[in-house]
Amino acid sequence: MSTYNFDYLDELEAEAIHILREVAGQFEKPALLFSGGKDSITLVRLAEKAFRPGKFPFPLVHIDTGHNFEETITYRDQMVERIGEKLIIGSVQESIDQGKVVEQTGKNASRNALQTVTLLDTIAEYGFDACIGGARRDEEKARAKERIFSVRDEFGQWDPKRQRPELWNIYNGKIHKGENIRVFPISNWTELDVWNYIRREKIDLPSIYFSHERDCITRNGQLMAASPFLNMDDEDIVERKQVRFRTVGDMSCTAAVESDAFLIDDIISEISASKISERGARMDDKVSEAAMEDRKKGGYF
Image 1 (cartoon, rainbow, N blue to C red):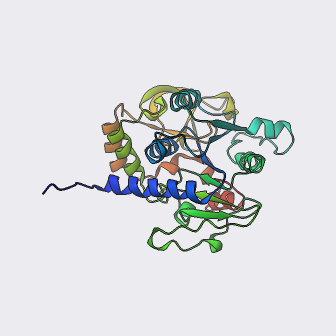
Image 2 (tube, helix red, strand yellow):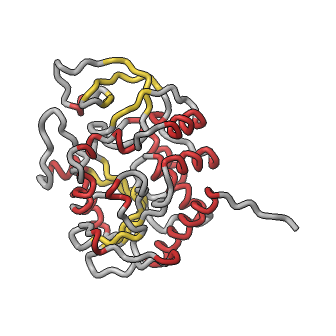
Image 3 (cartoon, one colour):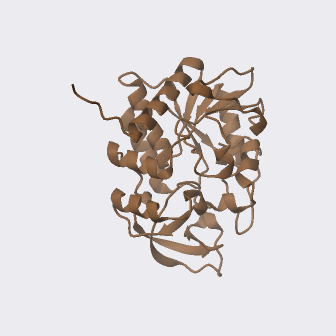
């Protein structure tokens, strides 16, 4: 009698596919939040496995700060063309132009937090009742509190006291009018799990995830890609470094790490030896001890 080998990546994949199908079954107008980062790229692969040969039962939604890495935007456009799915773009610049948010000033100004207003406006405009995201519990303390189906109130706010029990993989998507659910199918994955899955599935990624030469400055002890978005001044010394990015976000808050990892196997070895989480390279998480939780309570991803 033949045996079927079902390893831990198969189990994680099966759970995520089950969650995606639950979203399709329970909600009328879901969306998949796509940043161009490895986690949302992994979600797209999982959605292909969950729903092909049919079309996705949801569009992709990218909240564009206008300060993204060029490599990420290029990847996004090429991927959308390849898979033939609908892409909706919410523009932070438009939110600024309309006076809905005020651009930060100063040396450490960033548009990252401004995404919340654009996201909530996009949800309201299209009537989304569920938004699928690539957050994982191992990333950050506030995200460790998150359920897979996370209820947000009519203002998009997250209340950790309103989290619902999720026993035996039963997910309760019931909401009142105006509320929505944020859904995190890869909550139980780690950074290493994601990379092992990317290796197994041979998933292409934006080039910034791999070691490359880039002009950088050191700010607050972090290597930042030299860019006009950083409000650079005469104190900022530009140096050519061999770096890669563990996480992809707004250029004004996403730091690089020095690395010679050109291949996925090298990256996996590097992560295995690291004692710093990938969110350790995000300047926006260092504003305060509860920075992420405060943003989530305001409607952030």
